Length: 143
Image 1 (cartoon, rainbow, N blue to C red):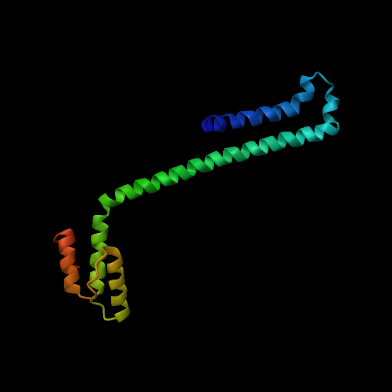
Image 2: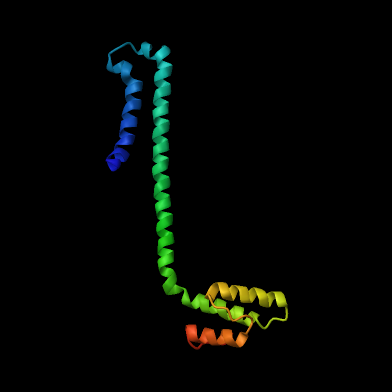
């Protein structure tokens, strides 16, 4: 029923606008009667119907755009598990390298990001992080 109403709404609104605008002619009245007091009302009701119709069309367009965005996020999320390993290895390697920095803040930030990225906590022990990297991703270039 909901689908039917969504499909029928624009047709009903368009038919209503046309009926309001051309009702005088359908009753075989004089065209000058259209311009009278009720002419302004007919014109306003017709414009209102078209305005509602345009709002409905915009709502449909926006819903479609949101569905496309959600679909893109879903595809991205599904592909993350397959394509994520190499960038994560590179990020962890760079952060492990930052553990050798002379600045204490740089080391602390590296540790914090390593914990967040890996779910592990080896503090600023560079050797232990390198062991974890080798276990998690296999041997590779040292950081």
